[in-house]
Length: 173
Figure 1 (cartoon, rainbow, N blue to C red):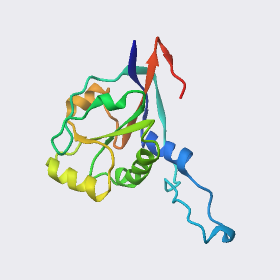
Figure 2: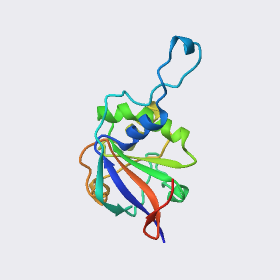
Figure 3: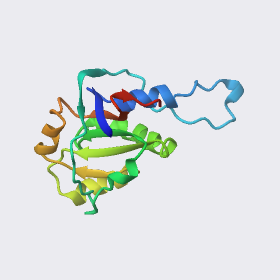
């Protein structure tokens, strides 16, 4: 039986680590100054990564996005899922959103990002914020019940990496 499990929580953000590892390009030299190079996915200031020694099953979630549409988990089949807890008032969250947007664009066939806002603002304000930041992945506002379903979230941003397991072993990625 296949199931999704969480293998880690990034205290600052696993997604930013992935962005740095997967998207960072070498600095432009004078020889390449005329060619277009993608911007770095991170400020490069570093971050903290904390892995769990007790992976947990993905909680059963029935989520509605900030536009009122149900979030379809069927589209996640065969993909790595990054569940990112964030808030509009969070400075580090604002800094990592462009990297998450870039990750979603570049790896949309193999990965999906799910933005779970812990804001108490109305959905329309969170939706406007997401539009301003060009968020290209589903965003839902969640309460303490969802936060607790993930074992608690020590800080925002926090990102859970979900991978597919079959018969107790991780699939190749």
